Amino acid sequence: MNISILSLTFPPEPAHHILELATGLVKKGHKVTVITSIPSYPYGRIYEEFRGRLYSVECVEQVKIVRLPIIPSHSRSVLGRTVYYITNFLSTLIYQIMTLPTRVDLVVAYHPPLTTAFNAMFYKKLKGTVFVCWIHDMWPETLMEAGLKNKMVLKVIGILAGYVYRNATKIMVLSRGFKQNLIEKGVYRDRIHVVPNWANPNKIPLRQPTAEICRKAGLSGKDYHVFYVGNLGEMQALESVIRAISLLKEEKDIKMVFVGTGTRETELRGLARKMDIEDSVKFIGRVSPEDVPGYYSIANALLVHIKDTDLFRITIPHKIYEYMMAAKPIIAAVRGDAREIILTANAGMACEPENPESISSAIKSLKLMPSADQANMGINGRRYLLETSTPDAIIDRIEEILKSSV
Image 1 (cartoon, rainbow, N blue to C red):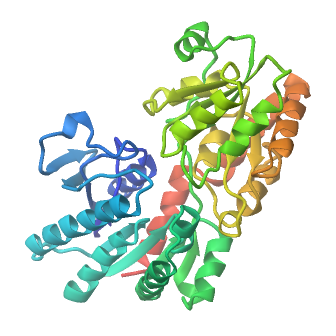
Image 2: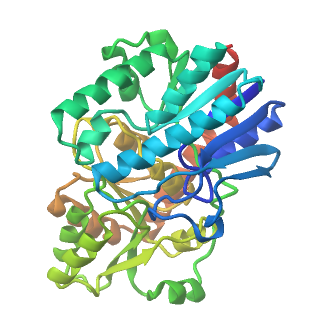
């Protein structure tokens, strides 16, 4: 098949599962083109190596990658985000019009944002091309949790999202909860397929901690390091984690380490200063994907935290799979489907999200566990993924869904 994947983000932005899907489909004999934007996420500015380019066309592992112009934004401004999404939609639409004679058998629209699905529907209307919507965040619910409060805007987005979901040939979602959400929105049950995320063991190899990595991170090998790796944004509600660490002031060897950046980073740093726990909280910033396994190696535990809402009880953050593949015990400050995966794998312990007392208690309890038991939790998580969710197995499943759509 000749497949187009529409995605707002793509590597070198943190979207490596899209590249892995594209290259996996190429290995199975398909022709794949990724239509995306000039990289800007998560900084809200064009990556230095792409500055001055109106567009870019390249080939990576036989995948054609078309990068189109956007006006970037990664602020909390609704207007800024809207312009970011709309310029991606318009750039893609112009490219689609210019390449209309090109045969496309199937389009995969990576969502969010919803605008990628609008572009997929353009192909459907003009060329009769089927499209599969690959949903990682449910709209408009996610937008509401991210701070959009205008009820009229949310209502309009909800109507548009429902229209897209009902018109997709097939939909792939991350959880059973997402599937039920779509059924309640009027999407036919047999169009919806639950396809879990994955983590590539080759991209997250097991490494031994070294003094060099500790020095690079500005950490002591003698401390107990709890790492959070990922977006420091609105939906992660990481203020609760900062407050949890403030409750552990007397535990001088417990250090909370944030790897990543996001719209709430400045506020989180300010809260750590205000609570006088700067010695216990370290902000590393965003690191390259190649360096992440090294940071995992010096972690004693990995923490996942997300807002405590109905939506996030059916959401499974992608970082959970990476954490499990890193073979470190997980502190799961989440509810619902995400917590169930971690506990089913016996890969960590659960606590209550947005509850500093519960989070601090879990950190302290895990630290007091015998080191062998902590190590076994990590081993359990990696083993579980290798048995149930390898990239090859999931991409095989996705290919079956795509083939059944045409």
